Amino acid sequence: MRKIYVDDMNDIAAVMREVTPLMDLKHPNTVRLLDVLIHSNRVELVSEHLDCDLLKYLEKPERITQPQIKEMLRQILKGLASCHSKNLVHGNLTPKSLLIDCKSGTVKLSVFGLTSINNVVSHHSHHHHHHHHQRLHPDPGGEYTTWEMNAAYMAPEVLLGREGCSFAADVWSVGCILALMLTRQHLFAMKGNELGGQIPSQLDHMFRIRGSPEWLLGNASSNYQLQDLTAKLNFGDSAGLDLIKVSHRICFLPIHSWFLYSLPVRRHGHDSDEVIGVVVFHC
Image (cartoon, rainbow, N blue to C red):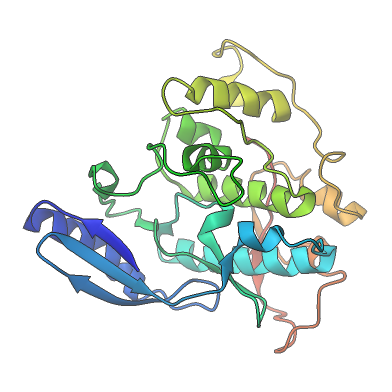
């Protein structure tokens, strides 16, 4: 259950405008919102319960295999595509917002954080509400605070304030999540990076690893050459390398060849007509 504290009826109306589309979001790879309870000072969102989040899942001693990674990424992208098809952007995709049913192996996107592009609700500004501009308790691993974790998965344009949440920013976050599954490391995480004045440091850290985006060259204090991440991200086959060499951050194509090899056997067979997003790390 998630509680959103409000000050007056106008706040409740704003929250309900955002929550209402989530009630209609029914996809195997998104967490179901079961009920909404309205009180005088808060709105409670009741969702289905799953065993653990992706961060906890990856803490297991045994490493997940490449076929498992492919299947999990396929599910993440299908859930995200379902949200985007309804003009909903997540805006806070991290390993902790991906929940897993360990018995079935199903991965689901948490709906908390999803925002309608046509009707953005400003409840992130409420001082009672959990949001990522706030230093919170460390994650279960104890290595990164909530802000540090969230910042590591934000797209550069979001950190720079050039735009708010967007489809493309969600896809950047998925790319960072793929890197985590492949390496068991947060690709752009920066320890000791508290919110106060540290966004430039986070961006510099990110660009040092990946290279500066073309739209920022000449306008930043530090310009870094584009880096090849293929050595850092061990895909294991040439199709995997091609996955991150595509010239756009995402394009919707008939299923990418990397997903066609070594996938686990699925209960309901292969969805021959499905489309899937190709995730890459270009800015």
